[in-house]
Amino acid sequence: MKAPEFSYVKPGSLAEVFDLLDRHGDRARVLAGGQSLLASLNLRLSEPELLVDITGVPGLGGIAVSGQTVRIGALTTHRQIENSAEIAQHLPLLAQAVRNVAHVAIRNLGTFGGSIALADPAAEYPACAIALDATFVLARRGAERRVKAREFFRGLYETALQPGELLTAGEFPLAGAGYRSVFLELARRHGDYAIVGLAAHARVAGGRISDARLAFLGAGSTPVLAVRAAAALEGRQPDAQAIAAAQATLAEELEMPADLCSSRATKLHLARVLLGRALGALGA
Amino acid sequence: MDKTLLTTLTVNGRTVTRRIPARQHLSDFLRDELGLTGAHTGCEHGVCGACTVRVDGMTVRGCLMLAVQANGRRVDTIEGLSDSGEIADLQGAFHRHNALQCGFCTPGMLMSAQELLSSRPDATRDEIRTHMAGNYCRCTGYQAIIDALEEVLASRRGGRK
Image (cartoon, rainbow over all chains, first blue to last red; front, side, top):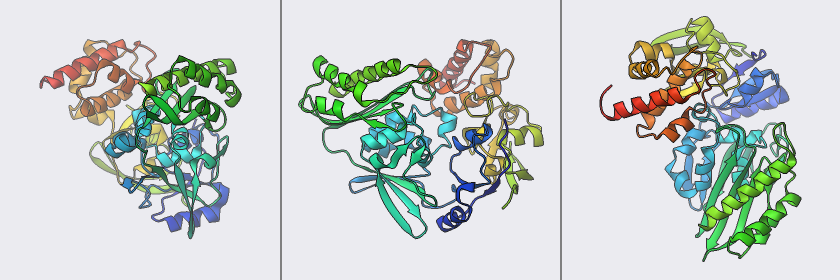
């Protein structure tokens, strides 16, 4: 199908962006990479009056390491994350996750900020951000605030972003010594939306797991941090019994709604499988 | 606010200026305004890959880019890649391996293949399959396409074209 009619503007500054968003309210949509927005317009799932293309605004891109933080600008593309030496070195969880984002042609245009702001339940970055305890920078005219990833995702496609606010960056703390990450995802075909996925980040010392952050995607409207599974693992070696104990907690903690292809039981089973594989990889 | 925008872009090396409706995606602009019908419209939401073209050296889905977003940018279509001889070896390999039947997916396949071959000259068969997973084919069953790419990778590595 073809997109409905809309106006388009490409401002050159944040000030202009805020001015446009304030003036047009929910009749305007922010356009960055467009890999989700333009698809939804082609499918006529929304009909905005105005697209505000923010890709001409300076200062919203780039990957920078300073002190104990990796800052990823909102306009950083998936391809840039995939090719980044800094991400490979400091945030290997993201480097693993990004390879599961759609396909190369979409990764060439799609952005980090777009994925976070859309908050699709099957998206990879929101789960990674929660596993890595990231913070998002939200800007509005004249002000800026920070929201922790674990508080940012509120519901289905619903985030802490308020009208007139723009996500400008994600800030990721550098991992402490001994931390390892594993990202795993199951999809029917490579590049499809995930059936279920797991972003796992934990400290492994002397073969024992501690401070495990296990963020599932595709498990509900928002990513779910499996705290009971983490508690079941604390201080233990990831042997068969520990893994089974952690897997047993998932049925209570993960909503895992059924979808067109998979029942709740199937998705729970797959979540348990991913947890087992991730723990095996972390302990290896 | 403007529903149409005066846009200038370079297509296969030629500079083109048109007033373009904001809602028109790049594939439709290339096909309907410039007569470059090599890029095909399949799913129109980014998953089938039949609309794949190259913008500023990167493959993109023509259906997920507004034509007005190509302002100031360089677009290469399958017509350009073919006319310049850039993918002559790929096209020959596709013929030899029977890697096309109806041809609907083929321009997109060639665009994606050329990006892979240029960026990963040492790609394994598995890596080829992963990269090409974003282009759907309803006819060939894919193996012939992968075979053609393997052959071209090997020959480019060997310095022959």
